[in-house]
Length: 129
Image (cartoon, rainbow, N blue to C red; front, side, top):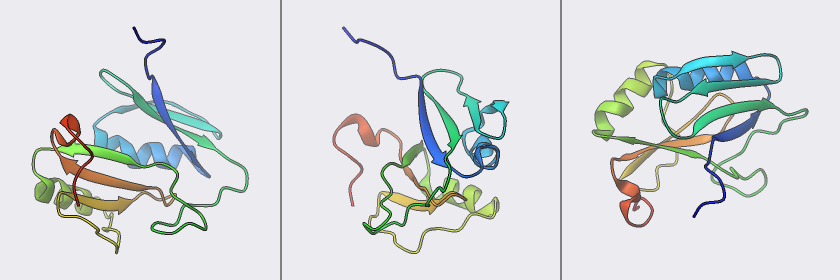
């Protein structure tokens, strides 16, 4: 039996509202709270995403270890090419490093990498390179 249920994944950043507005159209979720230090989306079920302001935030640099990514989000999609086109239509460019064939890497405005992965990628091991 689980001790608890995962409620949210929180990303550090310098502008919580901007990241909430960035991820809302990707997820289709509503921004339900936003102030200068915190914002979060409402997922229809399961864990949601929240964003918290961190003083002197240093964006991650991926790949690299000086300012490592520490965490990233994967979004399962039915058609990677079609979903990537939708992301790019929002004005978001692919990351210059694309280490695999079964996922596409982008970065959010705070520098966090996020990926589009094939649906059911996590039924076994991690998405493959």
